[in-house]
Image (cartoon, rainbow, N blue to C red; front, side, top):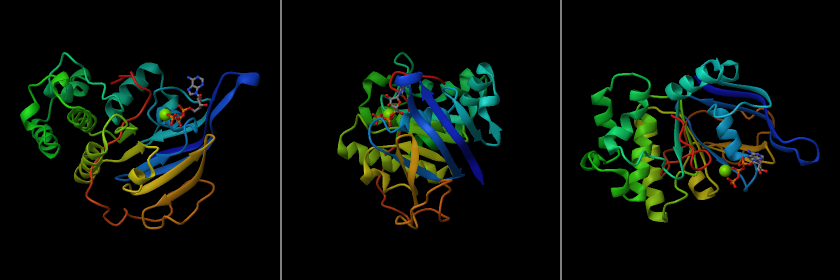
Length: 264
Ligand SMILES: Nc1ncnc2c1ncn2[C@@H]1O[C@H](COP(=O)(O)OP(=O)(O)OP(=O)(O)O)[C@@H](O)[C@H]1O
Ligand SMILES: [Mg+2]
């Protein structure tokens, strides 16, 4: 099932001579359960794309459809609620609430939405991420990798349509990066969670089902796991079905967005 689709998505900043076409006609489809990486050089439009996919900002043109909903047709309040329910964000800087415990951070999106906590599901997530012994700790008492695991749990807890992650391991050393990415991949599979992750690290991208290359605000390559040599030009539909033949068991998550933004 197609969980996310963009059509001729554009985001321009500024006007006239100083106008930047951060996204310039992006056509993208993501299938349910897919773990896709977005790669590209600095300034190519990766974060802008993630912001558009997650409804953190309105586009200049085109559409984004998430779980059947054209998100730019929603007003700001509706979009905030939609985001809280349907989008999970993981940021490079974790963005946990420092005065809340690990458990409180994990269930915060549910509390903000007035939803009851599915304790069994939280327990499953916490177990998979190895956080059982940290639930009463404050974020400041955790390592970076542990904090990012809490952020992954928080993103999963609402069972969103999609998780968006912008350089989620950007602040972690290489061993912790592998561990966290592996856990992100594992939880994605276990909970059948669709994930789009930005990374500038090609090696990490290769652990995903699909690698989408972006340059100057356009998708220039789109390789699925089964056929990494395939080059697809226009509508960047995934070109083969299924997930990449089980790629390594390494782990690491992703996060998205400009640092400092917490919008649950
Ligand atoms: N709020 C903004 N106002 C003006 N220009 C912006 C804004 N946000 C992004 N841009 C510009 O849009 C382009 C794409 O930026 P974006 O942050 O999406 O790049 P990126 O691929 O995420 O880069 P990086 O790898 O460095 O994070 C850049 O030229 C950037 O300067
Ligand atoms: Mg960026």
